[in-house]
Image (cartoon, rainbow, N blue to C red; front, side, top):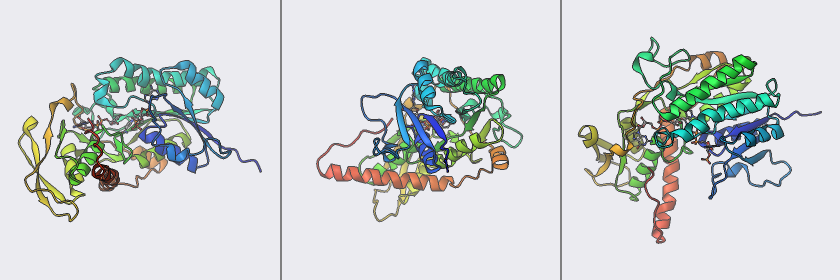
Length: 379
Ligand code: NAP
Ligand code: G4F
């Protein structure tokens, strides 16, 4: 009996989503190819556990050097791997950083999507290869009047991006839709709202919080700084969202899909929840840039911090030139048509991230005791 193994190609395989998606596809029996960038230091920590012996005959994960700014390289990799499914997750994905590197972001996040689509077309793979494009809730820009009647952003809500990242991603969204319509390609956008995990990049707000709270609880750091505490995000767990990426490419028709939890939470509340995981209750005082958080109650036997200690201040460095104030999505279409049900809620997410970062930071306590210097705070 011949078993036909599906082949997937993932750009951005070394990122948060790429690593969970690679795990999922390998579990499903896929051969997985991933594109990684050449860097002066190792950048595959999130997938190293999947890639222990590249010489093993049963190794179903293969990494290729490449970059979304290099059309020849992408075309060659697609030609060599002949994928059934391409997941275009590669991107400079930090909204604040995109204000500092707008041309680069336009090239990689916008034109990079075109390069993938065009390579598939040039190689005559339009019928064979299905394409998932990592679109984003940043496309909506949080404009209040663009929400639907129930107060959510859905597949019909107008876009109004508020950063070079959002503007580049809107090109990726439309070029994907255009290639679907123009060349009958199975190319889909997942409009994903924020999703986090213990593997989230250290400079996104949730991970910055769980890392800092863990360090403060363990006595490795006194306080930390954030930007806009009033921003609201619809935060889900990355594991639920990569499952949906795969479901999108198994659907009968190529379409665009909103993936979200339907619940929105302020950054300040995320801070409270993270401290709650180490038995600490906070008191917030002051307004705007003067706002600070202090320890009000501390009742965990392992984490004893002084009542009244200042643990958080606002630093305007982290404000964005244009902010997306509030995001909340309606995933009804994905639930109804594809049967997607998220398995994790915000409470679980915070717990998962805190447990992981506490484990990680405890290693720093051991290093500190051995006389090593400790990592600087992530920005
Ligand atoms: P991430 O952790 O920042 O990972 C991004 C990946 O893209 C990394 O593997 C990175 O490689 C790679 N990359 C960056 N520049 C590249 C380039 N020039 N050429 C090729 N690869 C490049 O992002 P994520 O959270 O997993 O998100 C995955 C995708 O979904 C991104 O496109 C993001 O914009 C989008 N998205 C994310 C969310 C979210 O909340 N997480 C929501 C909506 C949409 P290195 O490891 O070498 O840096
Ligand atoms: O965690 P963030 O940096 O994520 P942001 O900007 O929402 O973007 C993420 O989600 C998008 C989906 O909507 C993705 F497309 C994108 O790739 C990325 O994954 O910031 C969340 C909020 C913002 O309003 C920000 O102003 O938190 C606020 N914030 C407050 N203090 C901070 C900080 N954000 C960061 N990164 N660092 C702070 O100190």
